[in-house]
Length: 238
Ligand SMILES: CSCCC(=O)C(=O)COP(=O)(O)O
Ligand SMILES: [Mg+2]
Image 1 (cartoon, rainbow, N blue to C red):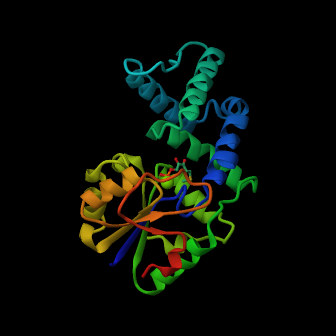
Image 2 (image 1 turned 120 degrees about the vertical axis):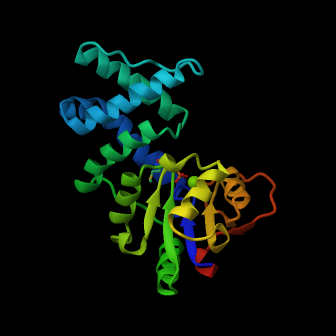
């Protein structure tokens, strides 16, 4: 095995950090943040992506639409849409892009610090020392990934990470995404080990030919019955 591909939430990081710290940060600062950054080009880029997502969602879901009129109405409808997506824990690139952008300010100001399981950090260091390459594949945007590893409670870990993938490469439940990642990092799927807490992701990676291990962590959702290897201490994986 030459490459390790890691999920974040429920794998390197407790689900509680994402749901009790990162998501509430977005929800509690949203109105104020949108007002403060309204004219920033970067925010407008994320708003356009959210508008496009809302249009795509309209026929399928009861998605709050984003009104393009005066800034106050647009902002309020945006907040409704974001709250709706977050309540459903949707993994759309548009939502994840905005979250990553907002978290940047939280990490840079010291309000946020990424939480990592001790063994995950030790294993990442061991694997790189053994000459393995470590990549991340998370529904969180590439920016959000770099922030959580860059501003972690174990220091800046980015030096150990060879690259990042988010849902722009495809859904984590689609085996094509894992084939594309293997091709992009110039390895065979068989030479890659994917670790995640989500069985549907594990099945997709396995179908693509990757080796897989199911992450077992306190606070993770109960697992359906399966035949894959499990680990709650990644330092035992070589
Ligand atoms: C990159 S930290 C934010 C995590 C997040 O937003 C998320 O949806 C986690 O999904 P994962 O694929 O890492 O389980
Ligand atoms: Mg996960």
